[in-house]
Amino acid sequence: MEVKIFKSMWGMTEGDTLANKLRLIADAGYDGVEFDPPDVPPADWRKMCADHGLDYIAAIYSLTPEEFATNLKRAADFGPIRVNAQTGRDKYDFDTACAYFEKALQTEREIGIPVAHETHRHRMLYTPWATARYLERFADLKICADFSHWVLVTESRLADVDDLVALAISRAIHVHARVGHEEAPQVSDPRAPEFAEYVNLFESWWDRIRDARSAQGADVLSITPEYGPPNYLPTIPHTREPVANLWNVCGWGADRIRKRWT
Image (tube, rainbow, N blue to C red; front, side):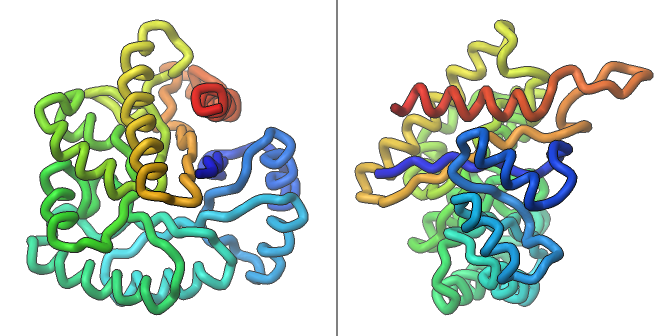
């Protein structure tokens, strides 16, 4: 199984054009880029990615199955190898959410591009137990595992729901590799020694996802060290200066993955 490391363009200030951003990402050794479908013709985007040897993961955000279908069809024109979806709202009742997933999975089958529904706050997969209900209901439902959200929502390290974490791991096709803690979705700097125990915990989950995907015979596992800009990234009061350099933090995360899994 091939592991492909993607760079999110969320909060990326380096590079003054899309083409230059892609060049910087490729030069840094990433295998691909994760980003919303950009405001350029799809053919131009596909060529820019190809010119830099980068795969593409499209990000979409949809409140209804109709919006999901529209967004997925548009994203497909940009040539993604898969799509990361922030899906619905946490307030949806079970029947409403099930109806959403039924239509979303049908659209995914029609389009033919794998969709990973992200375990994200304020979305339908916002907790381990909510997610488990849908994974048990829909055998074809796949996720993007971003456990930083679950750690925050539950204010825990998920030790008492490891069976639900294991179920999620078995259905993860994409990983947002961001380390968080019980009070925030992102540590201030994962390189700091005070966060080593959290880094080790999250890396143990990512290892389990890698092992599960390999055992399933998957060709590719995609992973994005998806650290975000302020306000995800804490800042110094009054100055608004970030406490760490986002590009360097993401690069550190990518290097950790390469060294750990090579």
